[in-house]
Amino acid sequence: MQYLTHIDENACPECSSEFLITDNETGEIACSQCGLVLQIEPLEQRLEFRAFTFQEWNSRLRTGLPTSLKMYDKGLSTVFYPSRDVHGRFLSGREQTKMRRLRRWQTRAHLHSTASKNLLQAMIELSLLVQKLHLPVVVEENAALIYRKTRQIQVLRKRSIQVLVAASCYVACRITQTPRTLKEIAATSFRSRKEVARCYRLIRRNLFLKIPNDDPIRFISQIASKIGISQRTQHCAIDLLQQSSQKHIVSGKNPIGLAAAILYIAARLTAENISQKRLAQIAMVTEVTIRTRYQELDRVLKLGLS
DNA sequence: TAAGATAAGAGGGACAT
DNA sequence: ATGTCAGTCTTATCTTA
Image (cartoon, rainbow, N blue to C red; front, side):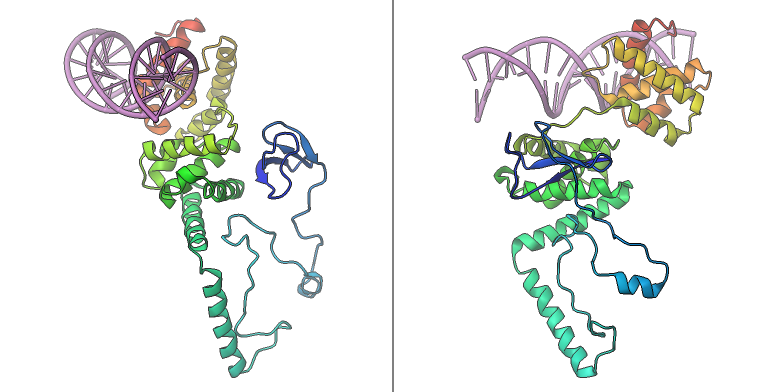
């Protein structure tokens, strides 16, 4: 699993980019722009022991949760528990009152700045969006990082939190190759596609991000599972996609429209007929787009369907 | 009812000025 | 920064099988 991360002080010595790609499997941390490998052994973020009983767990536990960018304070805040002391013993009534007061002031002091309030609000919005779209944690973490970065860009300052969160989320999906459309994300966050798209481009441009093109294959499996297409047809579709990639008719086209058209053809070839209308609804493209892609593919791959 | 044909319009990327 | 252009996608409407 690869994901984007960043370091504050140690920018890449080659190109000064602060964005890095972390690969958990190889343990490499590389620059997202020039590809220079900066570190081979990443910090272990998980607990470093196994515990079989509660006592073991308690005695070995000496760390908290790993730091997380999706928490507005990265999960590094001080927390006052009002009822128990550090050994778990109950406090007296007077002490409890004191701790409650301290906790209140801790929260107030923490959120005194506009920036913190903004970030807290944004992280709430983000977690809602992530929940609604069923996105994995890695996307949420990436989106949180992108959002933090956007606050430093002047042209993005006056954009609303929701739009920025939606756009950051879309960037994170693209980077992690998670098949979600701009349309879907915009609709879920109750914003127009246009607004979010504009914001997305500004982020991409200002953070100098190199975002890979969507791979139609991911949308093929996504649409197929939504619509309930057989494995046989899916395999047929993937095979067709590989054939069409070689014919150079894939680039420049909407990968979702292409995926939908390929599934349509595959369904016809395997006699598992699915209407263009249904595919268009699920894939959130128009029937016309499916039709033009389908005719193009039919012509180039010489399938003789239409 | 599904699919095909056609036209008008929107919006963005590439490029030039 | 602004304008132009080619190409893509969408919306709408009508026709055909």
